[in-house]
Image 1 (cartoon, one colour):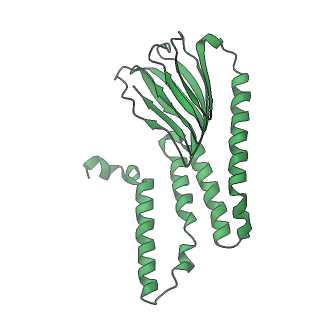
Image 2 (cartoon, helix red, strand yellow; image 1 turned 120 degrees about the horizontal axis):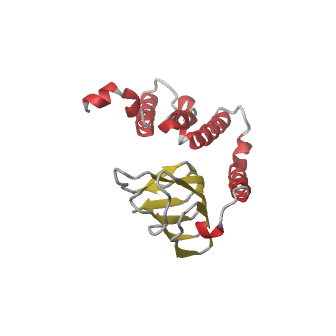
Image 3 (cartoon, helix red, strand yellow; image 1 turned 120 degrees about the vertical axis):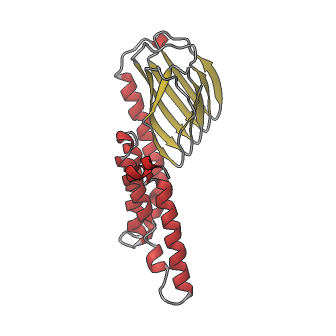
Length: 232
C-alpha cells in the first residue's frame, strides 16, 4: 500500500473489498453456527445488504458515471431484502425476470425516442442491429456524431479507426445488449466515457488513449447479460 492510498482511503473502499468482507462475515457466522452459538440463517438472510452497499458505492463513485448502475443495484438489493426478510411474499421473486424483460424493452424504446429527437446526418452516424446474428462494419464519417448499436443474442464488430471526432468534440453511441454484445475499435486519439447501466453484464474498456487525446466517445445504454469490448 502506497502513501497515496493511505491519504485517500475512500479509493480503497471498492466492491471487491465489500464482497471480501461479506464472505469473511458469512464464514464467521457459519463457524459460530457449527459451534452451536447462533443460527447462521437468521443473519445470512440479510445478504442483499451487500448488493445495496455496492450500489450505494457505485452511486457516489467516479463522479456519478455509474450512478444509473448504482440505482439499479440498490433497487434490486432492497427488493431481494424485502423478500428474504419476508416483508414481501416469496412469490414476488417470480416477477424478477418479467420485470427485467420489461425494463430492457423500456430502455430500447427510450433510446429510440431519444435518438429520434437528435437531428443528425445519417452519413455521420452508424447504426447496427444484431438479433440472433451479427455483422461487421467500418465507418469513416467525418465528423462522426455517434449512432446506435442493438444486440439481442447477437452483435458484431464496428471499426471506427477511420472516423473523425473534431478535436474537443464528443460523439454518443447508444448501446443495448441483451445476451449479446459488440466489439468497438477506436483510435488512440479518443477517450471513452462509459455511462451505460449493466445488470449481469458490462463493458470492457481496453483502450490506451494518447496523452493529448481530446475527443470523447460517450457510451450510454443498458447491458443485460451482455456488453461491449472497446479497444484500440
